[in-house]
Structure formats: structure tokens, C-alpha cells
Amino acid sequence: MDVYGLVGNPVGHSLSPPMHEAAYDELGIDARYVTFEPDAIGAAISGAQDLGIEGLNVTIPFKEDALSHVEPDPLADRIGAVNTIDFSGSAPPAGYNTDAEGARRAFERHDVSLAGTSAVVVGAGGAARAIAFMLADDGARVRIANRTVSRAESLAAVVPEASAHGLEALDDIVPDADILVNATSVGMEDDASPVPAETLHGDLAVMDAVYSPLETRLIREAADRGATTIDGAWMLLFQGVVAFETWTGRTAPVERMDAALRRRL
Ligand code: NAP
Image (tube, rainbow, N blue to C red; front, side, top):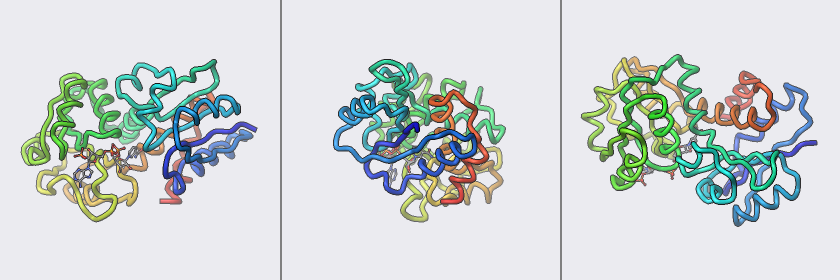
């Protein structure tokens, strides 16, 4: 039996085990997906390698620290965070950031093209970093708006052609935008949105990284104004799909994984 898993803290309510195990069931793969809450990521990675674990996902608070314990691919290196580790080669294991590709495939699934668009990313944390690099690599002009402007400035300094803003700039930059992504945690705890509703419009494609609740206030207000909306479960699904395909070399049963995920949201 192959073993895959997730390291983070906390991971008790993670949706990754049912999503990945649905894929193993569908394709008849003899594998389990388990969660771990280690104290330190370095020891967890070398222990996983020694134990013969096939692959690990990495989540908060270890995504950035994991980078120095793997051989990161160029995109993970630029983003500065690893969320998928593949132990199939020799040590150090290969590290990837599938959040970026997960977000790309979420847009693709909704027939939203990114090349030549004007994109606003709200947030400058881990999710925002992955999404901002992906958008720029796909040819979007990226404007990063964050509560702490200095963090937006640090990110904009490394993302090609990006600019940095405070949240008050959203009033000016969202009406002209084609793409809007909420990559803050706003909307998770309460029915709040980081983007003023009156700036939203029907020519926008709006993605929310927040997946609990599925229908955030931003998604609801964007849909009310005729925007294309992409809830946070799409990015979550596709980062898992890309990890599954990296580890197994097989085409993921996307619909089955999606159903397993949405049943629990
Ligand atoms: P993070 O690194 O801790 O970053 C948090 C971001 O949220 C920062 O930009 C922070 O701004 C901002 N923020 C927090 N509270 C705020 C508030 N009250 N008002 C305005 N801005 C606020 O977290 P992360 O890993 O990027 O995750 C962000 C969200 O994305 C979480 O909800 C997470 O669950 C979700 N996520 C989803 C996926 C997916 O697959 N769907 C993947 C990764 C993350 P400051 O810099 O000013 O503190």
C-alpha cells in the first residue's frame, strides 16, 4: 500500500484525505492519505523519506520552511513556498507549488483567459503569492492590494510588471479590472468582503480563495452584479488534482474528487 499525506498544524478538518482517497477508489489504487501535525517540518520531511512515504502535501504553517528541505522547482522557488513534495527520486525530494497551477486550472475550467487582462489580487500572503506569479506568468497585468501595504510592495517587487496598493485603492482599480481574486482570509469567519460591492461589475471574473463558506459575501455580491464567479473549492480541487497527477503519473478523476470535496463543504 502506498502512503500519501498532509503535514500542517492544524490539519484535523482537512478536506484533502477524502478528496485524494476518492481518486484512489475510482482508479483502484492501493493507497491511503493521512494527516500529520509535526513540530518541525525538516524532521517530518526526512522522516517521511525514511519511512517510504510517496508524497506529502504541506500547509500552514510549514509551506515556506519546507522550501529549504526540498529541491524546489523554479516556480516554487520564485513563490517561496512548497505545498507538494514528491519522494519518488533520491533525496532531497522534489518540491512543487500546486496552488499556482490549481488557480490557473480553476480559471481555465470556467473558460476565463488570463493573457492580456488586468488583474487585481487582494492579499499578499501565501495564497496571493502563488496566484500573483501565476497571473503574471500567464500574461496578466497584476495589481496587488493588501491591508499591510509594505507586504504588497514586497510582492510587487518580485512579480513581473506588478504594482502595489492599499485596500482603499480598490475603489479605483476594480472598476477597470477583468480579473479579481480575494486571497485574504476575509469572508471565512464572518459575512465580510474585502472588496466594496459597488466596484464589482459584469465584465469581471471573480475568484475567492476562501472555500468555507463556499458562497462568500464577495462571491454573492459579484454574482448579483453579473460577474463570472469561481468559488474557493475550485482552486482547492485543482491543487489536489495536480499533486495527485505529480505523484501517480495518472490522469486524476476530477469529477469524483470534486464530488468528494463538495459533499463536505
Ligand atoms: P496568509 O499567508 O496568512 O495571508 C493572509 C492575508 O489575508 C494577508 O494578505 C492579510 O493581510 C490578509 N488579511 C487577514 N485578515 C484581514 C483583514 N481583516 N482585512 C484585510 N486583510 C486581511 O494566508 P494564506 O495562506 O495566503 O491564505 C489566505 C486565504 O486563502 C485563507 O482563507 C486560506 O484558507 C485560503 N487559501 C485557499 C486555498 C485554496 O486552495 N482554495 C489555498 C491557499 C489558501 P496582512 O498582510 O495585512 O496581514
